[in-house]
Length: 317
Image 1 (cartoon, one colour):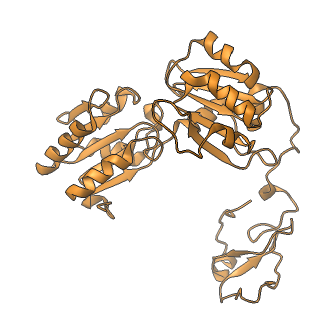
Image 2 (cartoon, one colour):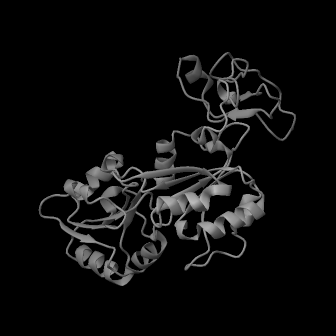
Image 3 (cartoon, one colour):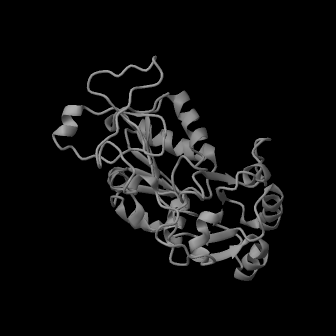
């Protein structure tokens, strides 16, 4: 497929434009927007302020009123003229960005493209709530999904099945189905007291946040009159946002920063011979036996480099 290996090879960049606040654009996104001869942006979801970074002579299209076919026509026409196209998607292109269908057509036409990640609304919403979505001993997984509405879902991807895990769940594009969502989440295993947050237009000037629980979510959403562009976040990792329970500093701590948690980069490493004889230790590779009894982790770092004082964060906690 014509995914460019170098920026110079690309005729079009699919760019994550973030959740709304133009200042959440990456530096790379900013630079490519400024370079573009043609800019196509999701004007119903992306702030028009991002277009200020385009050069004065750039041609700008809002995509909300365009079909896929029309968007491709604009891209192919520009590429035929030797122009560079910036296609701005809301949030991150990898999440509900209609990226796949555009890529496949460009593949057939032999048009090289690159993809630039952006700040997803799920992480912008978490920041606005001031929460971590993966709190130790509470939730260590994050499920991103949506409800089965006008666009069908794969048969096995139901809210009821996802709810059975009891972890942090973020539901996109589904606020109009909030009543059905609550029913399925309760049937799946969440309790009526499970914390919920609804974030409407995260990082926009008119952002609105609802902190609720499953038992009162429907009436809270109705009272707030939210019916579009909202993310539903469910799970006990949101507990600090709802202020239902306060924990001490010693509760739910990351193992990585515990004083007695030894690893290669702090306090010295506890070395152990691999129990599995099939695991061979090559020169320049050390094994770390974590203090909680987990299997040794192979640290693919030069021992010499470590002794020379290279500081690097351990990659797992």
